[in-house]
Image (cartoon, rainbow, N blue to C red; front, side, top):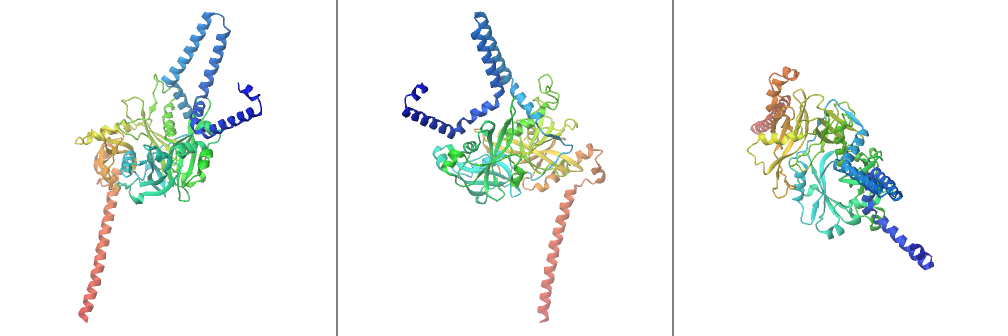
Length: 562
């Protein structure tokens, strides 16, 4: 039909060319809308091609066959093939099984023989921060999901104060004008003026159309990136010039047979206004590949890795015993990431680790931490501790607790231990959440604890956590299973509290620990140091008083002499 219309004359040809140009321009402008379809083709390219080949030859045989019985047989064979493909691939999740196996085969795995220490412990869990931030904004504002990042060498929770998604008009008209930047190590997170940073982003997560972060980033992709890249988590941080930027983590899909996701670098969106036609036609952002990130100090030892990628990498350790080990009839070393139903922030827990004394060459800074456990629901032992660099560095560090027969309890065992230790709580309205690792040198050896926070949870809205400025905190010894309640206001005394409660048990159990042989008085060194400091302070105060008395006495003697 189009061919006949084309041949009618010059006017018709002009009309066809104009329509084709309009269609191409529309497809170009709306590429962010159909990019998910391109990603779908990329993710399932092998299955799609296999299905087309089988369908093509099956239908060709069907058309060539003259026998009714043979035709029925071909149709039944095609039905059985596609039915088996669906049941095996999607119902039994064998496609995900192969994808995860590809992730495992391409991981740069490094087993460590010594746990790193934790540092700069964050007091509040993510959902508490999110709830308190929402308490500090008005009806027409939303708060983006908090992320733990490094700001000026300090770990902080950052999130955008953006136009609410409830009112569409504001998402089309308003900008993001402020960013929360709250210290993660204080028990008193404040969302007042000094922690509300005035900065304008005309590109935002809650904004509409070309002003939306997802759309703006996808529009920036080149033709090849449209097929194998997708935007993920959005972080707010300072660049090397001290200016606030949005850093959008990118996921890159690799492989032909069962493609798998990897870290694909970041897209950095600068603050300020952006031209309409720039957003509409070219998108917004500066692409920085994983190889180039080392040239930008603010992106190193930082938190820029998409949790979707790190979760799959950690989960892939279930293949450490071989390809068939996670199958139902094996599972000797298969592991899972435990998810706690009442904890809205599931693993990974972004934690600051100090690797300086582990001789691994790993940097000290932010990591995605996972505590992997056996696949059975009734098994809650800690099998592996996994440390994935949060800046996307192509390495995965893991510590094998199971092979060392340490018998540590895992994350999923922690809530009941905390509940049992404080029976007077109303646990129907409160819940211990987000048990992140706490690893310290205490009494002659490295000891692993889990630091949990008690949060009040709304009975009408399970997503709403009530965060207190001074939350109840508990440290659970993963080896001895004892719960130590600690004071959120005095982190420097946590180790002393742990020692005072558990030293007797450690001394009785650890007969080969030289610390107790060398310190029979059971006085913890840190406690001694604190006492010495207090004594020095008292002596200094007394000396200052004596000097002041001497000065006054001299004045009195001088007056008497006159």
